[in-house]
Image (cartoon, rainbow, N blue to C red; front, side, top):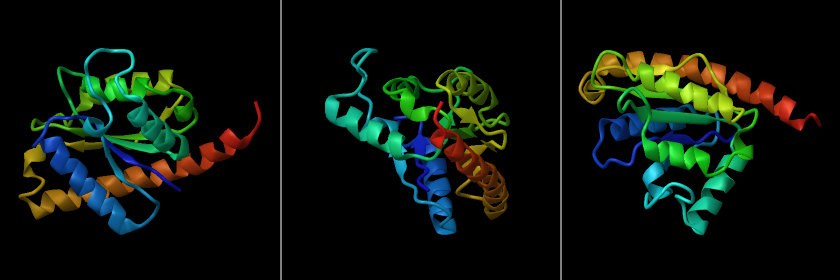
Length: 181
């Protein structure tokens, strides 16, 4: 199984980047599936909407999305939604998401952990015919992640719960994708 982790912001030095690195390293150590960390800044250039990727970036993203059995999105909350570059990346291809599960990790330096962003993103996932899994991870007060071992352990427990559901959906939906409609 291949499930990439997508960093939903292109801001350098963001707290979300540290969270994505933490989640990626932990998930790699678990060795439950093949993964890689894909950053929106490596795919999306934002001169305009409609063709936010050059052909090479588009083909690379389409290949990753096509072979993915599911997705993990780590994203901050910007104005109660997700970053525009993540939306541009999602919009670049569509059929590759059908019947694939999406797990969401919200990142916030406040107590909400990106809850409003998650609700906004779930609507988009539904529209592209993906499936948002229920067990999300809320990285509240995310600036603490590198400082407090207790916080890291709590986040690992939440990641484990999220992964159990994501893997279950990836396996179940794979069967559905292989059935002719």
